[in-house]
Image (tube, helix red, strand yellow):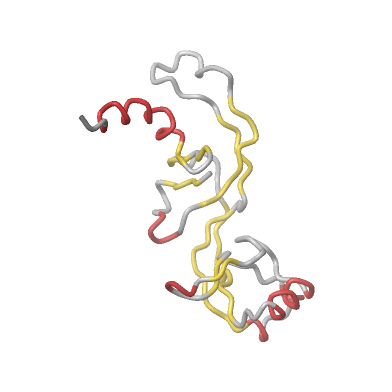
Length: 147
């Protein structure tokens, strides 16, 4: 699930990740828009305000350095790391990445903790589609039907 906070534009701060823990069986009582309550476990409990590229060989695993991105490289040469955003680099992780040919990683320089009451938007994907696409796909097929 992707989460975008109004106070932290995703173009500058990225998209937060989470996993659904529970979805209510019916819309919230008194909610005229038919919204369901969804409990989410966040991957990160902070917003990365500043990040930078660092040579992996220079990172001291005892310093508590945290990955700011699960990808390395730029453009079409991006490679997905076996470790997600928010992972603290340990000796084992550093050795594993070096063995895999990773030379530079993006790390968190400054982060701000999330607070209660933040508003935003959540995209829930079911398979390869967002929930809204799944709901409206029968309707869209009707309108897209070729005669």
